[in-house]
Amino acid sequence: MSENTPASGTHAAARPPREGRSNGQWKVDGTEPLNENEQWKQQDGGLSVRDRIEQVYSKEGFDSIDETDLHGRFRWWGLYTQRKPGIDGGRTAQLEAHELEDKYFMLRVRIDSGQLTTEQLRVIAGISRDFGRDTADVTDRQNFQLHWIEVENVPEIWKRLEAVGLETTEACGDVPRIILGSPVAGIAADELIDATPIIRDIVKKYIGDPELANLPRKFKSAITGHPSQDVVHEINDLAFVAVEHPEFGVGFDLWVGGGLSTAPRLAERLGVWVSPDRVADVWYGVCSLFRDYGFRRMRNKARLKFLLADWGPEKFRQILETEYLDAPLPDGPSIPMAKGIGDHIGVHKQKDGKFYIGVTPVVGRVSGTILGQLADLLEKYGSTRLRTTAHQKLVLLDIEEKDVEAIIAELDEIGLAARPSDFRRATIACTGIEYCKLAIVDTKNTATKAVHTLEKTLADVKLERPISLHINGCPNSCARIQIADIGLKGQLLPDGNGGMEPGFQVHLGGGLASKDREEAGLGRTVRGLKVTAANLDSYVERVVRRYDEDAAEGETFAEWAHRAEEEALQ
Image (cartoon, rainbow, N blue to C red; front, top):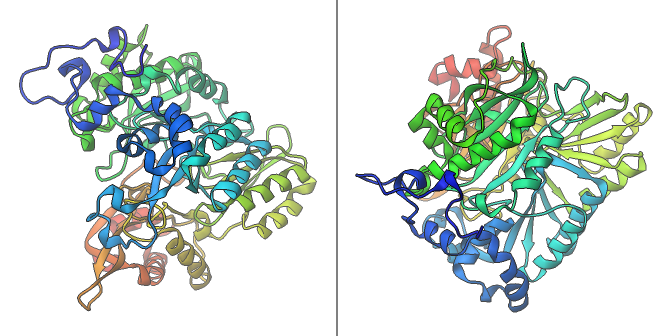
């Protein structure tokens, strides 16, 4: 089937458009494209651009790149132009893309389920040093992002990655993006099921498949078999979370329609139990349903969460089972309350008697040099495996008990902490104005400064659990601000002298399900509650101290933040 074909088989037969305003749903309204983005995707899909990158653009340089390829199809191969240095946040919304962008790219390396070998890590490190000015970030989608990539070097980068089983295929774009998986799959003694074979099967069958390469928008999915529920399932378009059925045994609870950005919505259960051997088919069914029924007329309404809000879970299940699956799914139990903390920081025993160690850089920022040192360090202690997490962390596997303390000491020397402070552990940040064309404020440096300051100013406050601090450079919530204890959305604020300065709108009391929280919930906003970047440290210190003084015994920060008077949150 051609990549440019709008749909496939009986699932996507075009129908006459309905009366009234079309939502651009292929199986309802027909497949005629209703906006420029949908037009070019049908004319020449995103997967096709790889050949032009290899044969034309890498040889003729940045200025030879077709504009639609540059701002559209390149994403299907993990490439976005990065922000030109020196453009302040006040101009983000004033300039066109070509005025904001530099002639360099962010490159996203796709790492489904976060599983890496030291050989693969060393290749990523080498690419960072050779082509990316030694940049590297661990993302909250288990990817690595590199910067300063020139189009001339992309074919060589692909060659190196693919030689060790890595890729950038569909790392971005209107496609099935990386499938999150438990960082301790197949390792943890307390996991219910190892979902690794399932994720590998889905990736092999469907990633790069032209039939799924033109979705209404991005499609994020996750699968975990660990009781900590460590893949942020509530904010994915599709998620499978391990649960034990009283009759059928261990399988998965199915969640759909989660997502944040400017219209946050938590995923909902469909109330079904999915056996391990059906997960790939159900994943494909939901993805195909989204392709065929997702809203395409307006891109800001094109995520799966808007379709679920329109249909509700009962209709969604009925359409899935009758049009996309070969048999109905049995009703299933809901997942129990999460056990443990899903970032896996610290030292934990594996099922084989060895140990895994979760470590954190500061807000996901590493480098090619650090990654190379980490590969050397792991191999020095007899390990060749590690994992990325959905919390900008790394998990190192297969450490002998006798080596645990020695490797922790050496990890500290390269900036990776296995016993971090609460704020280093629980703070994440998006890319921010340093590289992102959408950003308004700095995030990584601001967050790093906040972590180091709060480690000192709040050293006397002993909290029962870490307070999460998420810092985002724009409204799009790549750093998941609505589900943090303290979430900060970047914006410009009056400086009192007629100008503007970087600052943040504050969200308080959000969070995902955890051992301390039965259900996920979005943060609270207080009218007029904003903080400048310069005063961020002092604001967080003030509100944390107020919580420490006012909270009832055992009360979480989120519980307190939602009941507290507005005065206490200022």
